[in-house]
Length: 168
Image (cartoon, rainbow, N blue to C red; front, side):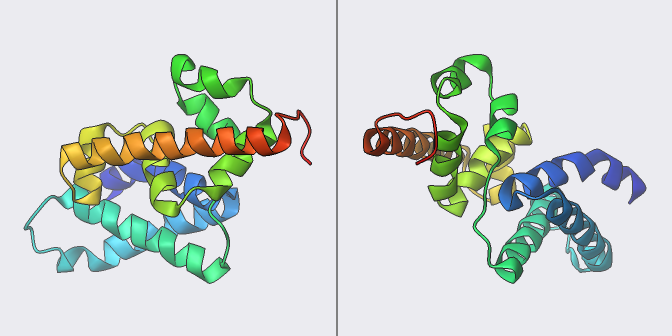
């Protein structure tokens, strides 16, 4: 279990932080996820991927935290900027931070989840597919559509505000 913790703690924390938007909540969710994994490990029946089961437990913990706090999930724009490669982030890097933050705020949780998993946690499309229990082509499509919706939201906000540097 100790090896599992050290291997996954950072990834689970980054997912929690990206979805919850607060360091303390992410720390609490990460701790709770490992407690649940430890306590329910005997219930894992060995069928299917153990990693998929672990990520499902983590996702459920994060969803529980979101419900408990009745908060909007928010992926901090500086985190996504750090995680994205320069070419991909370049189109948004010149945008005022508040526009990026607002676009991320408006995304549906499922879209934020795949963006966080890919850009902040560093999961490949194959890993995302495994974690979400979907096909690789399904994961690729979810990521593509999440990016498209994110870009559309940035454009929509720019059009409404005239691309102002300051938040209205």
